[in-house]
Image (cartoon, rainbow, N blue to C red; front, side):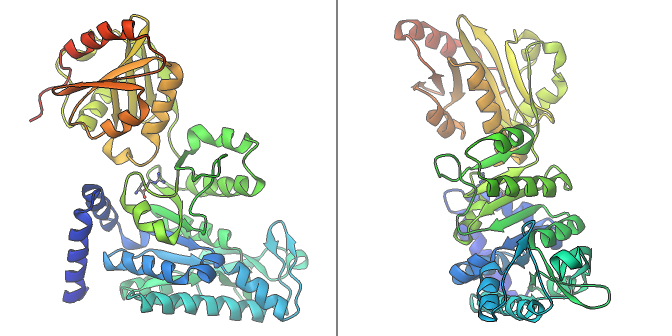
Length: 441
Ligand code: ARG
């Protein structure tokens, strides 16, 4: 990095750190910069985004470079190919979702994808970034079924040298989905297959899909914020509001994540929201993780107390007081399989008192805390809890509660239908509970 770019980078990081979510931004930047850059992210861009929002796309890719991150970009060219093939009077036929590619179409495809590739590279350069055009030469492929599909290839090997050379020179490698057979024939590689092959090889921390919609949509047409495959996959695939296309997308993503470590994740977002998605916990788009199963326990002996203890200490930045676990009359605990998030309750008459709700810092932004919370409120329709007034999670609690009272250092929250006459003494009782965590250092 030249001295000047290093300075620009510093300024931008400073600016970002002073935004509302400054600490989050800094933490994510550190996390991402600490990775080998070829393992940071694979970003897939659909052909439609190149056509419709080339400038926005280029600006957001150039921005990542400015802060010292270099993702590997793979793009498709569906709409561009449709137009070019129609102009050349070649009919497009699809079998199993793959574009049948007859001999005559190959030069058109090569030409069109290369043009899309160069357009994106130029745009990134115009936006102040550095990018390398790698339209072909990366995916070694085998013909899938020449008779049925023509020149469609399935990648068998990644030739990484072109990509590595670009990355070494500080340029974002921009790849099109053109492959070659071992004997040098150009083949059309489906973009999902290309991403899959790259991801297997590189084991990236993030996989990002940039689309026009900017995420997967829920029943009401709003962007679904996160999906935890371990708990949501089956329900989603079976839900009647999930379209066939969305089903395929989710299955494809599951297939990608199954071959990656638990820490890797997929984000679907738009060029405009990419920065917010990557650098904040809340993100802007749909985050999909392999996730963890959540189990419900009502018997203390089924809990791994030392892991639960470590989770609470890590989440709150201080340990529970001596004797706390021994003194707890457990009602229910909801814990993720790797003890990265948990909710622990005890009974308070008819009500359920939430004793601890803890999410590991590294697991924030995954939707894991929200999934545990959902289990909790499904279990306890009438819930009461308290939180230090300085707790940064209170924003979430205010969203979730039906009412709250603040007194000095504590705020007491409740949720669900409550009779005010019953509630008042319980609130007093909760305010009067002794502290359960060691004092902040
Ligand atoms: N910035 C984090 C990441 O990229 C969390 C993103 C959360 N996004 C979401 N749509 N819930 O992994």
